Structure formats: C-alpha cells, structure tokens
Length: 401
Image (cartoon, rainbow, N blue to C red; front, side, top):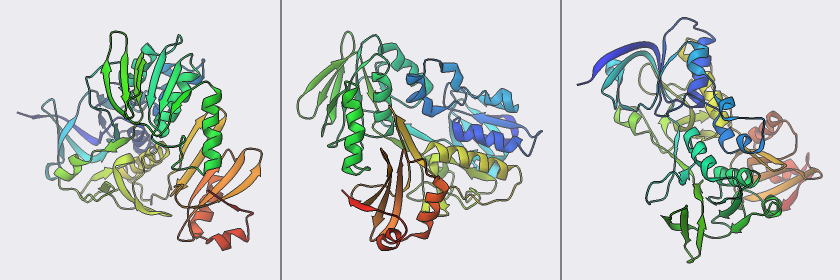
C-alpha cells in the first residue's frame, strides 16, 4: 500500500531540461520553498543536445560537463529511476512505481518524450539515443575505426551520424528519403547538406528502412527492406520520438491531439497543476495552438512555468525554434517547414540563405541557413503573415524547389 513519504511546496515530475529550468525559475522568486523532482532517468538533469553534438566533436568537452547539478545548485531533492504512475488532483498527491506517495502544493508535469525503437532482442549494442546512458553505450562500440549503422533521417540520426564519423568511426546511414532532410529543405540545400556527409566518407542508403536486426557475436546485423544486409559493431536509432501524456489523461486533465492542454500561463485544467516542454498543447502567440518537441521550447517553457508556480503572472510568448549543426553548417527554423510547400529563397552571401515557406500563398515557416540574421526579426516577419507578393516587395526572393 502506498504511503505518503514527502510533502513539497513544488513537485516536478520529469528530470529533463524543462525540469532543471523550472527549478531555476522557482528559485528566482522563492528561495525557501521545498522542491522535489521525480525522474525516470538514472542521471540528474543534463544538457541533452550535447549527446548527439558537442560530446562527439569537441575533445575538451567531457561527459561530466553536461551535468547541471540541479539538486545541489538549487537546494532541491531528486528521486531518480522512479516513475510516477498516478496523479491525484483532488488529493494534491502523486504515486510512484515504488509504492511511495508524494504530496504537493504546486505540481509540474514535464515528462518529455521517449525515443522510438525497433522490435528485436534488447542489447547495449542497439541504442535508440535519448539519454546520457544511451550515449555512454554508443561510446563503447564506436571509435577505433569500428563500423556503426545509424538509422534515421531526422535531427538525432543526422547529428549522431555526423558526430560518429568525426570520432574515428565508419558510419553507414540509412534514410527513408532521397536525401538527408529532403522533407524539410529545398533540394539545393539538402544536396549541400548531404555532400558534407559524403565528403566525410559516409555511406548513405537512400529510400531504405531497417526492417529487422539480429545480434551477432561481435555486434549486430541489420536487414534493409530491399534485402540488403549490413553488419556493424553497433546500431544507433534516430527514428523519432513520441510523447506519452496518459498520466495526465488518466488524472482527468484536459488533453487534445497535441498533448496536455495548458493556457497562456502553462496551467492545466486542474487546480495547481502545470505542464511544460514536449507534452504540452499550448497557445503559441504566432503559430496558434500546437505542441513543440524542441530543446529551446523545453528550456523557455520550463523557466517560465517555474516563475508562474512561484507566484509570477505572465504570458508564455516564446515561439519555439528548432535547430541543428553538423560539420560547418548550422541552421534554425520555426513555423511550418515542409519541402512540399511553396518555397522562396533569399541569398545573403556565400552559403547563407533564408528560405520562406508559403502555404496557400501565406507565409507559414522560415529557415535560416547559416545566415546570422536575428531570429526575432524573422519571427516578426512570420507574425505579419505576408503573401509571396508582399514579401517580394521588401526582400529579394526567388522560387526554389
């Protein structure tokens, strides 16, 4: 039987970057209130983007450098490797998989996303990259010229493939499209992007899916849907992530197709319960109600909601930016970025572009390709929702495919 073991002024479910920033937000206003964090992760909050980026390309940056030391820094208590199985809004309490009960004055749900995986035998040589422990597993079978297979045409797949090949690893990248990021970038940019991978010596399997894998004595064998077989020391999956907001739904909180419904203050439909990060359906000030699975959204929503929980009264007005950098290319984007839309490019100089995406002749998204242009400026353009003709009067743009 569950028993109440702790009571906190602020209780946070989730141990990611949103949780870390929520604690920072709380402490910026309330220096004394008790803070508890319940995390399913085995490590305290850390800088997740580094797992597929900086840790692979900066020899002076190490595993311990990504740790935030959240509990010590902000005088909070954290329970690791613990899952909340039930939220009881009427009792201001939660229950965990260890049979413990925690009471709260204010509760934050910030459980983030989970990496998608393939069906097959579990092994430390098959990793769907999401956590610090996943990164450490990849380190063990990569490097020293070892061959690693990476599956995925999104952020994680493209980033970890680039990181590995810059870390003395032979890489085979399996993607479903004609080119890397061909579903987001116009063709001329996805071609430039992919060329960096090819120049680095990567083997790319286009229009392919990993249909099955099996463990071998020294690694893993992957079968593609066209019958091709690849053998390597390890397999890394970057095939996307999903959010699970059943915890909120089962507690009677309002949810929709985007996630846990919150208002402009990031408050849920239940008294004294807030939500932030990947799991929320929130009213974006530019894009309308949506969800956003991007680290900057986690950081900004976490900091904002922490302050709200501690008594501040504001409106969440950050429009999320998703970004990536590989080799010597960096890009940032927001809004609807889809290569099926009508696209126009503004060339700012050598290898510097802004791409504007139009849906039904109205600006719907913007991509900044190593441009250095202020994102606030680009967001202000998107907010005005210009037509192609209207934008063309103030910016020199050309249609691209």
